[in-house]
Length: 151
Image (cartoon, rainbow, N blue to C red; front, side, top):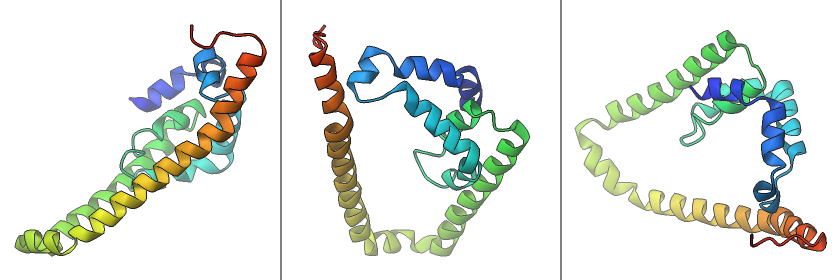
C-alpha cells in the first residue's frame, strides 16, 4: 500500500510539498527530496531488506522505494526476505524462551529500561540538533523576508 503511495507521490510532488511554507518553517526543503531519492536509487534498494527488520521503519521504507520507482518485483523480494528474517528471529527467540518467557522477561527487564533511556536521549539529541540546524535558520529566514510566521 505505502509503495503505491510512494509511486503516486512523485519526486516533483514531494518536492512541492516540502517547499510549502509550513514544511519550510520546520526546516525542510524541496531539494531534500531530490537528494534522498537520488541516494535511494544509488544505495537504498538494500535498505528495503534491512529496514524490514526495524520496527517503526519497516513500513515507511516503502514510500521512498515507490517514489524512486524501485521495481515492484525487486521490492517484493527484498520485502519478503527482510520480513522472513525478522519473523524467523522473533519466532526463534520465542521458541527458545518456551514456557520460561516470564523468567527471561524478568531477568532482562533492566535492558529494556536502558534501551528506552538511550532511545529517548537519542531522539531528544536528534530533535535539538535538527531544530538548531534546520528549523531555526528557516524560521529566521522567513522573518527576514517580513513573513508573519504566526498566521
